[in-house]
Structure formats: structure tokens, C-alpha cells
Amino acid sequence: MRIALFLIGFVFLLQSCEEEALYNKSFAFKGHIWEQKVKPSFTINLKDTTTLYDFIITLRTTTDYKYSNLWVFLNTTPPHGKTVREPYEIKTTYPDGSWIGKKTGTIVEHQLIFKRRKLPFKGKYKFVLEQGISEKTIDEVLDISLRVQVVKEGN
Image (cartoon, rainbow, N blue to C red; front, side, top):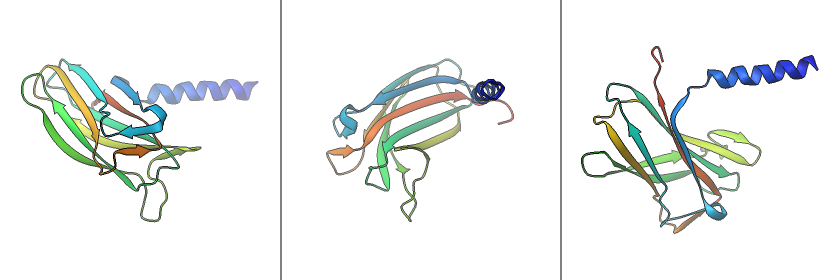
């Protein structure tokens, strides 16, 4: 009984050490398939232009995902201005085929992290993700999420 209480307390302690998210949303893909026409969208209202933020995109796949990476286009629309479209690679495996990222059972989490970013305008920013490979569909993709957290001093 004491061990169980200790483990529960330890889990709560670990969770309290994690950075609190200013924004954390996920988009689940139907049937674990990301079709080219499906473009997950995330809208964030940022009120402070002096704060540093970490932006974390997390892609979750199954272990049956057959590619060593995934190219995505990140479309960013600021409160004032036009949309900027940038390509990014999310690597999923090392050259030897082993998984990059956190594997739990048959699920693997892959991350693309933009650390210590400032945004120039107050207001709503819209981020839209597109899959950027030549296939019309990508199988074994569970979901994709965007997490935004304030950088604490000293980090």
C-alpha cells in the first residue's frame, strides 16, 4: 500500500515539473490516414510580443508507419499580414531503422520543436499543417498536435 501511494505521489510530482502549456490542441486522423486534402488548423491568440515561446509539433504514428520521415508544410498566418508557407522534415527513424522519438507499445511520438521564438504582433495566429509528400494518403498516422508554452527564465 505504501509503495502504491509513493508511486502515485511520484507521478504527480513529475507532472507538476512539466511546463504548463499556453496552448495544446490535437487533430486526430480518421482511420489513421492523413489525406492530402486534410489540413489540420490551430488558432492561437497571443497577447504578449515580449515573451519567448516554445512551439512543439508532435506527430504520433503506429509502428507500422513505413517511411523514415514526413515532410510537412507549415502555413502561418499572422494577425496582420499574409500567409507564409514553409517546408519542414519530421524524421521518424534512424538510418538503421530504429525509431526516433518516444515509443510506447505500438505508438511512436515524433517531435518538431521551435525553441525560444518571439512573435511580432499581438492577436490571433493561424497555423495550418499540410502533409508534403507525393502520396495522396499516408497510412498509420494517428494524430498531430501543436503545443505552445512560455519559456521560463533560466531555460
